[in-house]
Every structure is written in structure tokens, then in C-alpha cells.
Length: 174
Image (cartoon, rainbow, N blue to C red; front, side, top):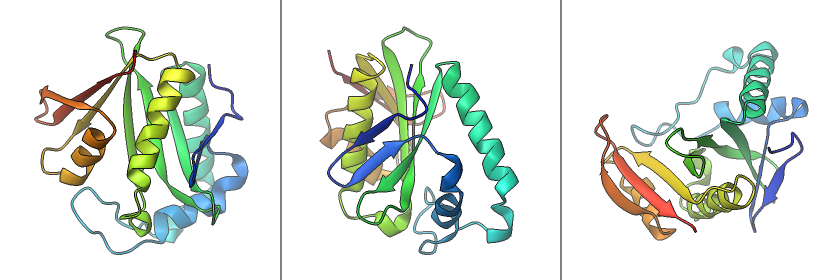
């Protein structure tokens, strides 16, 4: 089980759970970005919709799912600016106790810097060391070439299409 104070650092990123005092950073993450760059990109949210109440509900939901040991939502922080650069998650998969699903998304202000690869490697390390997973799965829309490149770069192998038509990738670490 990962504690609420869990933190994993790479050269340029900190991967950790959201904390109460992250509200201003979360608000900036979701409202300050370039215009939408592609169909998978975030669209900046209206600042009026990013309320403290919505953030508190998010914290409660994430903590409850974390305590169940099934879903771990992380904020991704840029170490140099200490601003939130994106989000990530690891989910326990029901097919066996050694498998997890991973997902991540970066604010488009952080694209093109190799942070997606760094983040993906960090999620694999967290999954294998902290959660004792020997298999990581990821699903990607087949047109999302950048995400597929990142997965291949860190060692994932393309498996097949899922029922939803997404490309499924697998990485075995043990």
C-alpha cells in the first residue's frame, strides 16, 4: 500500500499524490495551457469551474480508491518550477495480482521535452517496486502516434487491439 506521503522523483519530475495545498497548482494545470493541439489534448477549463469544492471532492475520491488499493492517481510536478505538469495513474488489474494498467497525460506546455518518456519510466518503476507488479499494460488510440512511440521507447510491446479498438501494449518487468 502506498502511503499518502508517497513521492517518487526523477531528474525532472516528482510523482506524488495530490495534497490539500495543491489546489492553486491544480487550478493552473487545468486552466493555463496552449490551445488544444490534438484530439487527445486537454482543453483548458474555465477557471470558474475549478472550485475548491470540486478539488476537495477529487481528493476524497482519490484517497478512497487508493485505500482500496485499486487505483492510484498521481499529480506530476515539474521539479524546477514546482508547478504541476500533468497527471498519471496506476490501476490494479483483476486478471492477476501482478498486473497493472498505467496512464498519463501532460499539460501541452510541457510537450516535446522528453517528459512523457521520463514519466512512463517512473510509472513502471513505481509499479514494479512499490506495487510489486511484473506486468504493465497500456491502451492507446491507434492514431495517437506519440503515446505509442513513448510506450515502445520504454520497452512495451504491442499486443493487439482491445474490444474498444485501442492498441494494447504490454511490458513484463520480471
